[in-house]
Length: 229
Image (cartoon, rainbow, N blue to C red; front, side, top):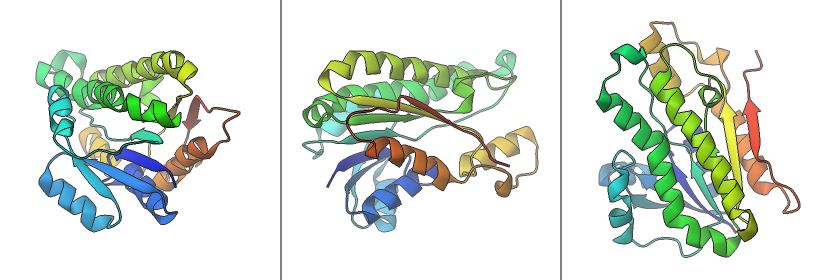
């Protein structure tokens, strides 16, 4: 039985991953931003355990987690949570930049730092669910794409640093996926939202689980998942 910590399990890709991993009997820990969200996650996933830490405030994650019981060993850390606010660079305020970078980049870096000791024990796995915007930036996606380009650099550096310890690092780049975030993006774009046009969260979760389950003689470092229709 493996032990996993997932961010962003409240909906979309993270929720599917939490469901799949609990159903197969793995031990699952879910990070929640506050006590109310933690209670909601425990209701949705009764066998899971929760930790409370606000990704929007990475500087307090060490203190918050240090005052809670944590997994002694960890087989995977799955970074799925994210935020997006579209807009031209010329109209994007510092508040949006700071929040986007905090949640999408700085918090994953800090969580990884905090849990690396446990991951080294198990020769575990860190998975970053990035975005197609982490490979190619378009107009009005500046702050989000910058955070995701940074997340790619974080993963690449971590992979080189932790390879001697046996820690595997995978980045998944999904295209547009039918999640609540995608609905928000369409609303910001002023476009009609048809989830059937986009990747199902289950398909991205399959890519993640495939990377986790790959035998130790190989490592999926990067995988791009694109809409098939």
